[in-house]
Length: 537
Image 1 (tube, rainbow, N blue to C red):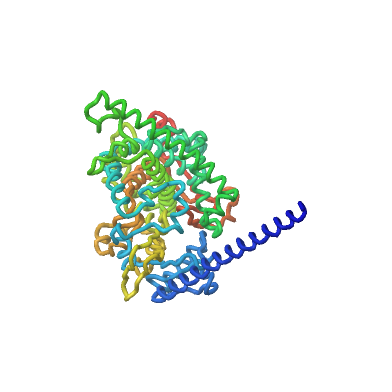
Image 2 (tube, helix red, strand yellow):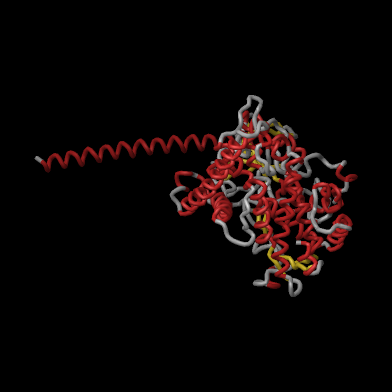
C-alpha cells in the first residue's frame, strides 16, 4: 500500500512539474513575442534616421559601442558620415538615437522637465546607490528637489568652498614637493588629482576631514569600488537584469560597498540633524543654527519648500550620495583638471600665458591662495579650461527618454520611449560645428568668437532645465587647482615609466568619466624654491 502511495505521489509531482514547466514556457513565449513586437515597432518608427551597419536584425549594434580609444574614433566616423544623428539598437532591448549636432541636441535638452526622464540603460544601475535623487527623479518630484537643492550652489556658499579647494590643493602639492625634491619627476595625474578632489568634496559636503590623500579610508575605498563596478556592469548585457546581477560575485561586492557608503551618509545626516535640532532650542533663527560655516548637508537639512516641507532623512542621504557621485563629483572634476593640465603641458605658450596671468594676480601677496574674487580675473586661464572641457569632456554623453514624441529638424521624430543619447563628444568634435575640432585652441572661447556660436555647440555640463546643478562648483575648483598648479610647477608631457617609449602616446579611456589607458603621465618641475613653499604653509 505504501509503495502504491509513493508511486501515485511521484506521478502527481511529475504532472505538477510538467504543468509548471508548460506555464513557464508559455510566459516566456508571451514575453518574447512582446519583445519582438516592440523591437519591430521601434525599428519602423526610427527608420527616419540613418542606421550604421548592424550585426543582425535582432542583435543590432550589440558589442559595437566600445569604451576605448577605438570607440571614440568610431564616434568620429559616425559624426563625419551622418553629421547630425543616427539610430542604434542593442539587441531587441534598447533602441537609441545618437545625436551630435546643436540643431538636433537643442530641442531635446531644452524640453520641459515634465516630459523628460532618465533612462534605465545608463542610469538604472545607479539607482541602488543614489536612490530617487535629483539625478534620477522626474516630473514634479524632480522640480521640488531642484528648488530645494539650488541654494546649496549659491555664490555665497561657493565662496566658503573656495577656501577648501585651496587647502586640498595645497595638500596634493605638498606630496608633489617631496617627489620633485631632487629634480623634475614624472607623476600619474589621475591617482593624485582624484584623491585631492575627493578630499575637497568630503570637506564641502560633510565637513569631513578624511585625510584620504595620505591614508586609506573604508568610505573612500567603497566609493571607488562602486564606480568601478558600475562601469563593469554596464558592459555586460546579462548583468543589466537585477535578478541575475545580485547573484554574481560583482553584485555581492556591490552590495558590500554600498552598505559602507550608505552607513556613512546615514550617520552623518542623523548626527547633523540632531545637532541642528539641539542648537535651535537656544537660537530663534533656525537658518543660523550651525554656528560654523554651513556645508552641503547643513543647507539641504534646512531647506524648505513653499509648503514648509523639507527633505526626509532618506532623501537627504540620496542627495548626499549623488553630490559625491554625479556631475559635480570628484571623478568628473578630477578628469577635467587632469586633461586641462595635460593640454597645457602639450602647449607651452598657452601654459606660460596662463602662468603669467596667475603670477600677476598673486603679485604682492604674502601667501599663495586663490580667493573667490580672483576667479573672474583669470580670463585666459578660464578660456584654456573651457577649451579643454570641449576637447576632453569628462562626460562623453547624456541620455534621456521622453513621455511624448519629440520633433527634430528634417521632419524626423524620436518616438516616445526611445533612448536619446546626446553625444557631448560627438557635438564637440563635429567638423560641421567646429573648425579643426581635434586641435586645442583656447582662442575659440574669446568673447568675440563665442557670440557667433550656436547655443548648443558647447555642452560640457549638458543644458536646459536638467543641466548640471553643480557646474559653478566644478568651474570654481578647476580654476583654483589649475592656477595654483601652474604657479608652482612647470608641466611637460611624460610617459609611463613602466612602458617608456613603448607607451605609444596617450590613449583615451571613456568610462563613467574620460580617463587615459595606463594613466595620464606628466613631468613636473618645481618653480618655487622648496624652503619658500614651506614658509607659505
